[in-house]
Amino acid sequence: MALADVRVQWYADKETWGWLDSREKQHDIEPRKTFQLMTLAGLMFPLLILRNMHDCGGADIPIVVTNLKSEDLDRALDYWVELSKGGLSIAEQREKFYEMDNSWCLNVKPCFLQVDLLVRALLSDPATEYVPRFIVFMSTAPNVKARALFTDPSYCLPKILSESYPTGCGGRNCEDKDCGFFDFSACRSLAPKSKIVRQDKFPKGVARCNLWICTIEEPAGFTGHSKFKTCQRCAEVLYCSKEHQKIDWKLHRRVCEARPA
Picture 1 (cartoon, rainbow, N blue to C red):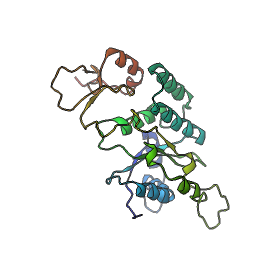
Picture 2: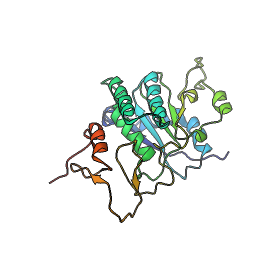
Picture 3: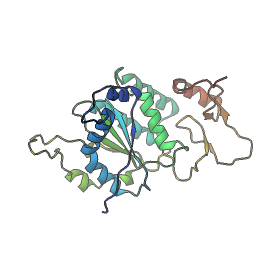
Picture 4: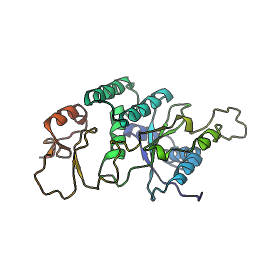
């Protein structure tokens, strides 16, 4: 197994970065950089293992920063896993979303809508250049280990590797066997070849309905009569029907902004 470099892309809400930026410098290093460096120091070995398993083509590893407790983070991963199986109707999926959205405490940052939109974009947005093999979720809450959501079962670690990975932090004076920064046993995987994950057959620039669970699309360069209509308020997203636009509006309205006059 050849050693590979690790490049990461951090995702956090403005309040988290603002809180970090307001803290005092440590050894003349900006607090945001200190947080990132300390986190990477703890996650380096797991990230190297995950990175070395796949040829990511130099792509960044997405790390989503929250302040969730372990049980809430697990519930979020289970939510995306269940959606990936494709057995829920639109009404059931909508009910599942609002159940998750309402269960998150008001002090959770970022909110579930923001995290859900981010995961959607990473998994299925044609504008993204690649679909990551996995997404790392970490929390600033105490005693919460990071974990990964694999976008296909074939990307998961071999069981013998995940079960044999040391659980301690490796500190010389640390006697807590459950100490550490990453929990391989808490990782999840989406269903194989799930429709919520953009496959290679979807070219960059393809037109797709903004309702996540809709798979209707038009290829790039389509010259016929398009069935898609643009959101008249923001002109940024497309819908294949008024019905799907109406269903998606409860979510889209939170991020929809009117075009400047």
